[in-house]
Length: 391
Image 1: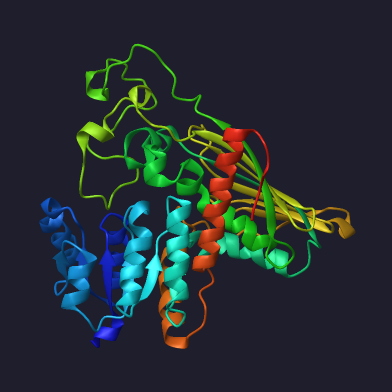
Image 2 (image 1 turned 120 degrees about the horizontal axis):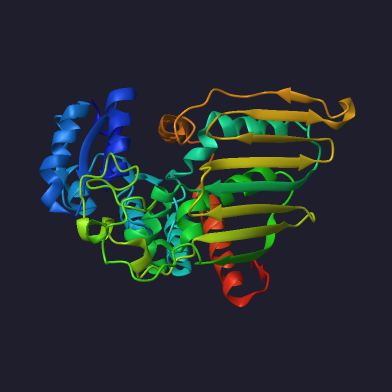
């Protein structure tokens, strides 16, 4: 296969999911996967072989991969948030198109760096990893908005609720620190902020943010440092003996981190937050995010002048009501899929199509930058107790 059809992946973990989709579902090739943790290179290679990528090699850095394969023109960056802008810049300078995992960055400075790098390479595709946009569920929501059936959108209500095991990630691994993640909202719900802005994009732009939040969930005295030392086997946050939450592609397991007692963490991220986004047309969007819930999932209600539509991502259930017809409810559900609504394969296919056709991705770097700016502004509002204007 022509090297122009091969890919380089920076970062294992979710990078292995991408490799599996490329190799097993799309019939594409992977030239190399780069990961700085050399201790797991053998395991990464085993996975690549299982997926059908026997010709793929494993290297330590993206730079090494780019030197070994100078003709490869597409790079997937699925590394920790603090590395995104630098690696994107490196890939762009090597002449590659870039798939960048969300969020764009963990700081405003790195957002600016990413924007400068993109401006210097306007002819290269940058696909932002907002996979939820590509799910059948949210595409149906967008179709309802763009069809005009709802009329002008007045309010969008969204919620994301994590299970106890999922929320514990934000007390144990690298996501627990703002300096690494850019905050709970930025890391977990940049997706949702993007969806909100996407649904309103034809009508208005966000102009200010007000948010409240706290760190009240994980408060308990007298617990030991780690789960293996604890006798409370009924604790809902008790760590799995081997694997952290939803990390089937995560080959490195840091037991000291992943088995840390959630009540004895140095975490500084928020664990519950409510965000109000005000738009230029006077409408508003609301997002509630919480790290522990007995009802995990994402829900949305879109209120328009002419009707409303509501639904749940996990079930695919969607209900539409047309006020001109007496508000009678109509079931317009889609088929339920995996946790990303089946969008993982679609977003990669769109990335490749954009490279071939020259069209812009549905989710761009600018969209990612806006979502992170909203997240940073929301956290600033929590700290200051006042609305924050977007400049």
